[in-house]
Image (cartoon, rainbow, N blue to C red; front, side):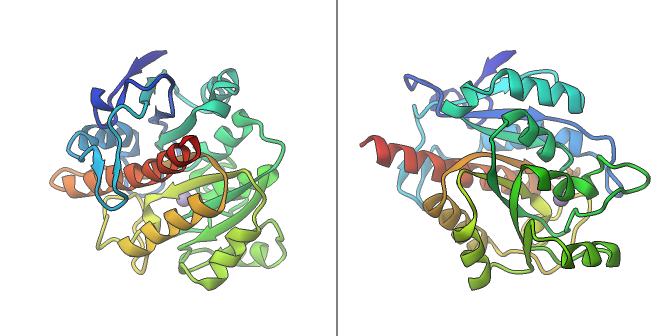
Length: 280
Ligand SMILES: [Mn+2]
């Protein structure tokens, strides 16, 4: 495994310990429409170099806060589960942020992390609750369903699903699904057990903000809503790990790569702000 400082740059290294580990997971094998998400982790890392170390929205300086990038060859489920499992203790001390790749990686990460039970906040345009998709049970379209064994879910931004998924959701008490960031969603997040895992599918965000995703859907989260949501989750729950998946970098749309990097940065900033406050 290689340790680098490819998220934001070497200036964010230098703490006495790793506070955040960014882990590229360029896994792509079941994408159904727009392809190219395997290139997303590198595109996000490249774009992150353009972001200020000082987060002016939070009045937080990320210089020397201990953000490291861990590069490991991860080709699929077995690699990912065993990598996460092998570093389980480290990931209890250091906040891991996995950059997909396909959404399929989320249940694999949850398996590797091995928490007895957790809450999962799942931002997504799609329910991802299919039993199988194109004959494949590990598809990105089944990722939320495959995460149910690991904890209770709250899904936000969901605005597209099949009638099969609707029927399944009606009888499923493992998740609560919201189309919008609303009072009901706050309450559902409050009721989730701790610790919490945060999964961000970039298609949860409105395509007017970020359009380079495999399966874009209109009517998604606006920027301010997403920032408010992230603040709410990190303030009210003990978030211990996250992923950000399904960016599909397109030529002539570097804006999407930058916005994706900025979303990751805003989430990581909220984690670091909380840690620094606790240490003070
Ligand atoms: Mn998804």
